[in-house]
Length: 391
Image 1 (cartoon, rainbow, N blue to C red):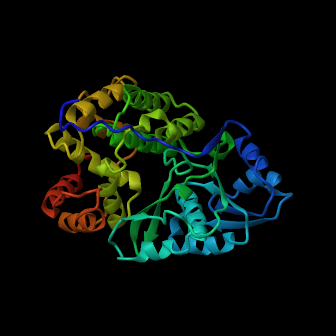
Image 2: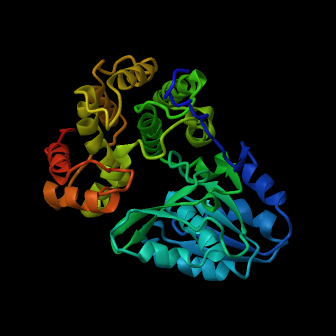
């Protein structure tokens, strides 16, 4: 090492969730929990979920709350936190919105000042860090996902809706202690939802992979990321069971592919978040509109969004499982999204300049997510996305 050269810092990677896989995973996860009172949070749109978990919980004191995933917001989690204080654990069975609401309730019960942090500043900032040392005891959290792709069951981040804007909350207590990937919970999931979830997982891997790793990232991390891209696409194209996609999706968070990744490298998520919130379209519809515009900039040398050679390597891994896709990543992701039935349909909404102002206010101006991007630059990007890249 020469004089003045800084040593490479080691990469840091730590996950806390215990995962149960396969038939009977939900029952096994609940059976191994310590005796105590349980708050059971269920997706109201899936009444059969109670049959999946009730037999194991029957012998314990259990109260049931059914949530409409489309109506989950900050107040939902605050109310759940109040109920959770009389219980020893929360079991969340549902999609990403339901699991996020329950995870936030666990955090709020242990750190009552967190809702105030979220409310502070209205739409600014978009990122909230929970208290480093929660003041109260934390309850257990068991997650039983009924969808695939979000990986909310193992993530230490959750989104919360406040006055029509999604904020991102990060804290270790948001990651479930136990996640049960039970095929009975996803068996009736429509194939369209499986494909959309797989695309979400694919793009999550891409978001981290496109930027150079930080610290001492072993080459095996990049190799696993490329393997995940290939395996996710192959499993989806060959119509493997939803359980297979769910297990691969969890690896995008827990697996070795995440070692050395910059937490805020994936600019696509923040840009798509504002587009989704402002227009009311689903998260993945907004995402597939934004991705081609972002990837075009990567290929043209804008390294703030990622490295061109890494995008080409990642896309080669995807094409290894789906040879019919174009060689060009931009045209390729458009074709992949179309073939999997994920296309954006935008109602009349805010102008690109308004979207850019929202994004900079929530995620830029000193925050690490979009710091360094001007409103003018993002206006151009949103204009390109809204011109109908996927038409």
